[in-house]
Image 1 (tube, one colour):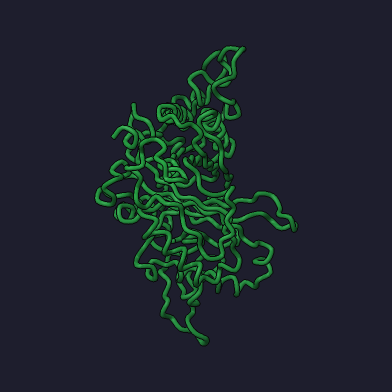
Image 2: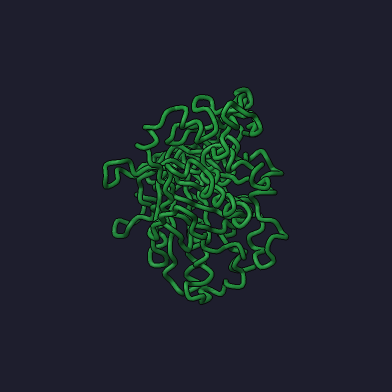
Length: 421
């Protein structure tokens, strides 16, 4: 308690306790969560650690994601911002305010160092994850902006344009990104709002996205959610408990890129804003919908039979050909048809009101973490663009790629190894 008012931390009694449109929709591995094994989720997640939280952390219910452009040309100002963001993120994920004083206890003649809308709210299992875009290293003319060009990872290039993309530049790319996930939307929005506020004069917002209803599971403790097409999504996602798969497909390894030793233990983050033609989809028969996906709408089991976690049998034949159609989503993006590649997705549904013809401006904000976009995302998306029957109901309206550094130790700041290594 401070100044006669309860801080968010005070309310907690002491702080922290402790494959889909490119892989987006379906694809079954591991076991369904065992109710007897499912532990109660932590009240909050620590900001400091070997990896950044918000990647394998059990996916929360809400998202606020922002991409920013760096407006300063001064490296020291950029580093100062990263330090300020680190301190603020550590406080907020623990249930505290963005600044050391808070929303209501500072001097009356100056703006508060916290905006206040999360005052009295618990931390909501908030995680804050930072990433660096290609533009942080060199500008559009190839100029080394902050002396980082030699440390730019080879894989960190703007994503190519894929077939059927209708990308909006105002919803794509960015020098920096911040992903805030929480169970309370107000907590997630509070985090991004304050980090953007702290960056005023050094960064500007390029685009942002709100999300709800996670569209994947990142832990065996979670049940599989549904996307806006009504199907279970993320059945075969890599889970936090699959440590070998994470090392193979998500975390950047020590031998991956000699120039980017600072990224070892980190990952790459791909975003794709996917508009769904909801009203057209809703007019399709149930059988047609299931044929597009390759799974049943009710249980999420593959059309070849079994339960949700049963592996699809692509060789099973019906009277008119394969039981699971060759152009079904589950077949096109399955690891067996993509050299064994898997990715870790933690996307969210979105509804941004209505479009100009009265339809829902809605879909899936695809987020994936992977070891190398050149081997783990781009081939998958190209296969999907070429062969996936689901593409008829999707419009890709934004995309971006970021390098996500490893976690932050006590006394360190986000990206320290990049700037000082």
